[in-house]
Length: 467
Image (tube, rainbow, N blue to C red; front, side):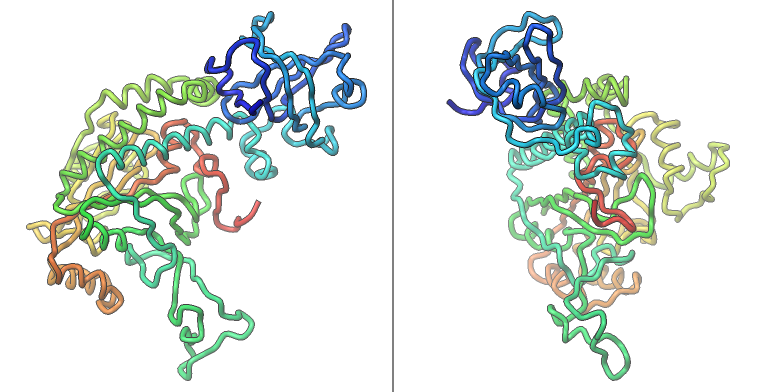
């Protein structure tokens, strides 16, 4: 007799009257005067629990079953039957119930029947919050989302590349990075000039946690044509907001013989594919979010699938903002890097649908983005979604070595640090393009959960690197 998941039971995959085993945790329990206990058990496989009915004739009924409380782990063997109650379709008539783990003090168990705020779960019992319906539903949506991304790229013959987390260069050319070192902080070796002697370090040079796998991913795009990665990236930004994480997950795709318009089309297809699959496979969890977070979630996501994205030039966006008669906190002019307030106006007030902004000024974008013929802008794009803002950013990469070298120097970087990246342009250079998608922002958009710290299993933020 094998263990079955509660999900399979509710999907009607288990024959009625079968003798089955389930394993999970007690959600709640009530005892009747007739000598029976009705126990709701969940195993995390789906949002629903299942009611098991334990009779007082069971050998351990008085010694153990009567004392079960929320959170206890159990293994149950019993007969699956149609429920006589109206609240559930199935019951399990217990033949044997084994208590695997007790809750030490039920009165202080943080994840009890009592409702807690999301903030309480995040800030006080992060190690236990996965036991809540809220985090369970988010996790299942996130899982389906990630699997959908893999299916999408696999069907289009993209190869998954595991890009390095440790690097010696900054992909974006700016911003703070986390250092990786084995040096003794109490006795740091110094050069004669007083600088740190990184030759004594593990990698013999200054090293960091990566902010992006893009540059290394390009080396494989220029050999295998179509590649992608999915992994953690790290930003040492001094930002303590609901929109920032120090460690988050990014999907990045790169394609050779590809221009900016090609990846615009690919990006829109990808986002719609993922959301359609989540709507199809996570109906119970979507209904949960509809009930507690976003009453319009189904209509919003279905509307997303039916809309065509609006494409607009950065220059036109600036013109729209200047004529909006809105007194923005951040001054609007050509050459500004758009702020959240600007993006929200464009996507939520003006167009009221997903927007792709293209051709940004070169001074606000990274050195590797292809310079346009006007010499002022680069072939870059950002996709903005209502309620989220930027969710995906990409560009055509600069394949012309002489222009790439100029852009590296303009950005205050050293050509020697990017020698291998530049070398790709010496040997069979090709037009190629790519983008990066923030996994947490997409989960946030789908679920309606506003704080990005609640859509990642273990949020790492400034001053918080543990539970």
